[in-house]
Amino acid sequence: MKQHQFRLTLEHLADKDGNPVTDEPLVFQAPSHDNIFDIVKLMEQRENITPEMAQRFAVGLKLMGEVMLENKEYPLFAELKPHFMEIMKAVKRK
Image 1 (cartoon, one colour):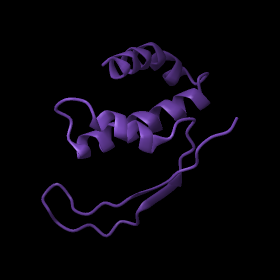
Image 2 (tube, rainbow, N blue to C red; image 1 turned 90 degrees about the vertical axis):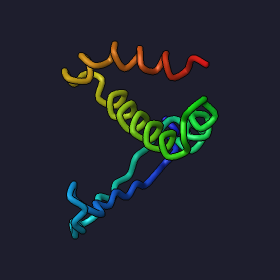
Image 3 (cartoon, one colour; image 1 turned 135 degrees about the vertical axis):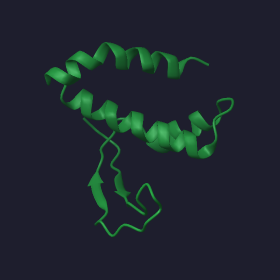
Image 4 (tube, rainbow, N blue to C red; image 1 turned 45 degrees about the vertical axis):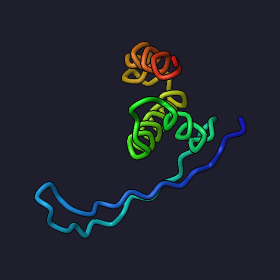
């Protein structure tokens, strides 16, 4: 299956009290059957969604969805699938 290839970098900048954190960043590959940038653009067009909200929501949802698709026989993901499908239906509604 052809997939878009993405690399994500997550840096922990500060703890909950605002203190700087020096943890090494998480850097990982994240293949996706969708172009995540296109999904972000679509989310940004929704009412009352800021660009930052659109980015965080779309990226999180797509990362979760791809892992679930790739591992659909895993018991946790099989259990979550119906709920995830309902979320996706709500997201796709205008």
